[in-house]
Image 1 (cartoon, helix red, strand yellow):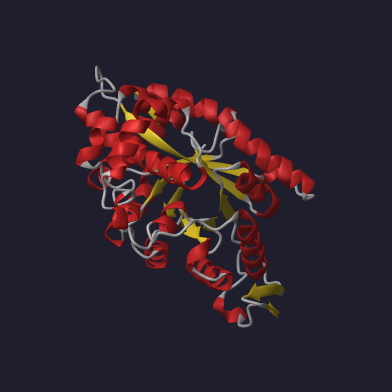
Image 2 (cartoon, rainbow, N blue to C red):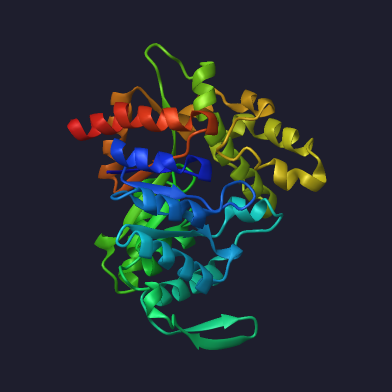
Length: 353
């Protein structure tokens, strides 16, 4: 099992080097332009300050920049950290919705991935922009494009996007439980890889999960526990609200006890700015008005919760199900402390057992 962290602010870039020393294997830098620092600046600094840890976007948003621009950006980082750079790409659930726009649809997303992969491989590719299509390629090889192959990690919560990871990517990045079970997600990616004539055994699967490390004698109703996992849980609820608004989809059964109450709470927001307010606390902090929705039941269903030895046991089960790596996003005010605590209490225990 590989272990990752997420660093979203350039102010915390030094934490990536510290995480490397703590034993973390990779770092995601998110691409949510109205909520986080510019990912390319963070990654460039991280590349200069580290030697071993793998670094990349988690996830770059296809709708924010042209495919050749993304390929150039990650290739430049790969020049700084050759062989340990990866390109996570997604359709942009939060990044797009904070602008009042929907994420990219699956069909254009597939075409986007095709162009990025070809350019990173040093190939010429037909590229359509607007009403015309022209062959393009990277023309200045001295920039470092193609120096070391950059794996593409494809974000996918639904079946079609998960299949794209097997067809066009090197890894699937999903979210548990939003993206289904690890076995289900891996099965979809492997089936698509096989159909595309690729080796399904080479597909990796990474999961973003919510974490709660319980202290001795602590319960799920503890104010400290709620503060630790609340922002991550509500980020999942916010996603479900958007999905319901756009498609009419109902939430999973374990969300139903708070669902109508939360929708009523959301309807009370400023209608013109609701798209901002829904996501403004995204994984960063727990809004005061949303704390009441963090119940023991929803923590149990949305969170990998328990004492360190229980977390390790569950991680071993996930690895057996086919999970390659796991990542967590901690609240801003607890980021440094929880990154260190998880390394010393869970990663060390996992590797020593």
